[in-house]
Length: 298
Image (cartoon, rainbow, N blue to C red):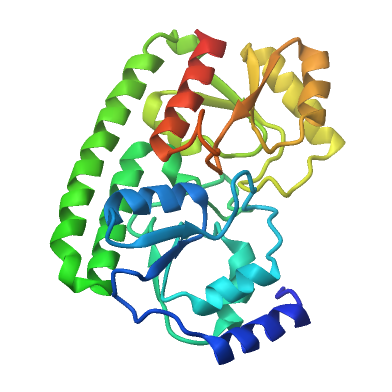
C-alpha cells in the first residue's frame, strides 16, 4: 500500500524546482548522491577527485526505519545522478523519487546479483549484498559504468579507479578468509537481530543459527512464539553470541541472553559507516565486523 505523501515534501520539491541552479550533468563539480554512507564511500573510490559524492542518509541511520526530511526531498529534487543499492532496500526513498520531477540517472549498484530469498518467500529478497565483498566488486563495476555514462570525458579515470578499488576488495576477501579460518567450523554460528548476514555467511562458511526478527528488515517485530523458538534454537545449536548492529535495540537480545547465557555483541556496523574509526570506510567497516565476530566465536 502506498503511503500518503507529506504535504511539506511536495512544497519543498516545488520550491526546489523553481529555484534550482544545479551544475549541468557530467561536469566535474556535479554532486553525486548515494542513498547510504557505505554506497557513498564505494562511489568515492571509483569517482576519485573527479566528482563530489554525498550520502543522503546521515551517519548511523538505519535505512529500514528511516523517515525522510524536507532536506532529503530537496536534495533528491536537485540530484542529477543517484546511486541506490536496489533489491528493495531503499523503501524510504520511493515517494521522493516518484514526486521529485526533473531528470536524473539512477545507478542500481546491486544490478546483476542474484538475490537471496527466505524459504517461504514471505519477506521478499535479501538486500544486504554488500556484506560479501565479492558482490561489491560488481557494485564498483556498475558504478564505474554509470559514472562513465554520466561523465564520458572521465571514463578512463573511472575505469582506472575501479580497477584499483577492486584489487582492494579482493584483498579484503582474502583477509576475511584468513581471519575466519581461526574459527572451528562447528563454531561458525551466527545469531543476528534481523536477517542481515546471509551473504556473508554463504561466502565464509557460517550457519545462521537464528534471528530475533524473522525478516530482512529491522522494522518488523517478533512474536512471543518466535522468541521462544529462537531461545530453543540457540540452546540446541550451541551458538555462543548474538550479533547486533550498533543501531539495533538491545532489549530483546538481552532478554534472550538472560535465558540462554550467550554473549551480546553490540557494536557491529552493517548498514552505516561511522565518523572516523572503527568503520569510517566500507573496507574498515568489514574488517571491524569480522574482528568482532572472530573474537566472539573462535
